[in-house]
Image (cartoon, rainbow, N blue to C red; front, side, top):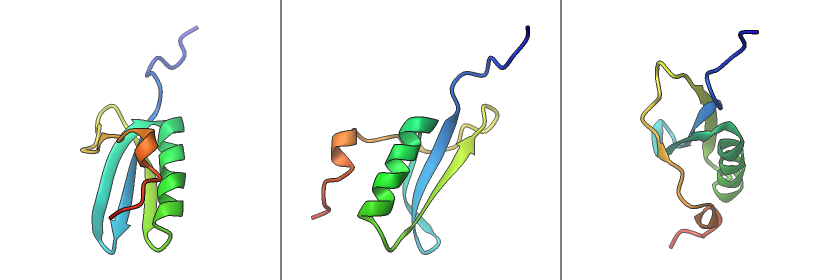
Length: 75
């Protein structure tokens, strides 16, 4: 038996303005992928990265904001 009991994979999604991360969030992989795609559409000129988060290094990203806010235009 054995197998992987690590639980769901988490990812860290960041939106970059040059070398500065202007958004930094962590979430389960599927949700993080949807967030990264939404941020890529919303901020077409900025780099968006999505990296795995290990249990040993949980990262510093915050939980994702509510999904309804992902497409709200900045004022």
